[in-house]
Image (tube, rainbow, N blue to C red; front, side):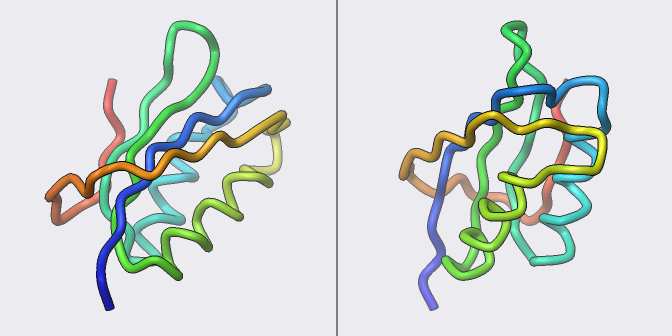
Length: 91
């Protein structure tokens, strides 16, 4: 199955609520590679790469987020796949 790349931007109450760690945990469980980081504007952005069903499932999970998060929106953009063999939290 071909691998796809997606850039995501999650807005709402998504910083200071373990959103990045939770996203990394979900991504690793699904076999999705890439990264996630906090942005100065209070959002969280990231690159997701992997088989399309797994990437789509992670995007659906991002709409919920961890228990203490309040997700307002998840913007998704189709991008070129970044080559990576893991999922990391960028600082």
